[in-house]
Amino acid sequence: MFDRRTVHWAGTRAIAFGAALVVLSLPLVIVGVADVLADAASITTAIDVLIHLAPVEAVHRDSWTPLSLGLLGVGIGCWSLGVGFLLQGRTEG
Image (cartoon, rainbow, N blue to C red):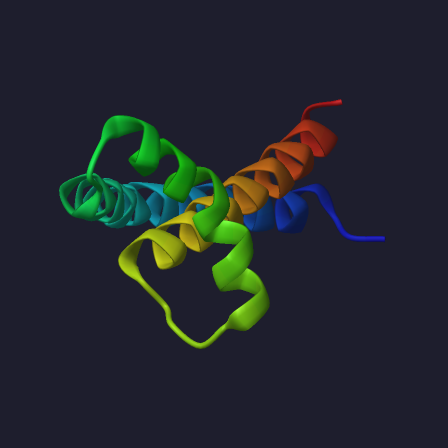
């Protein structure tokens, strides 16, 4: 359907985009986790908040915290990396 160069080009761009997004999103995750740890009364409370925070924010969508934005960025970045590696594998075979 597409020639090898086009698939290789798209795979390279997807890998570059995914890697950049993961690298840029990791500081947001670190800041978000540090914020939750600073506000929590104990480590157990902080862990409980971190476990239940992302699903609740994903459902309500009323507040985008650095943690939720960072997790979204890491997720999209990993997905883009996977697509890029899949396309790169198609051109190698």
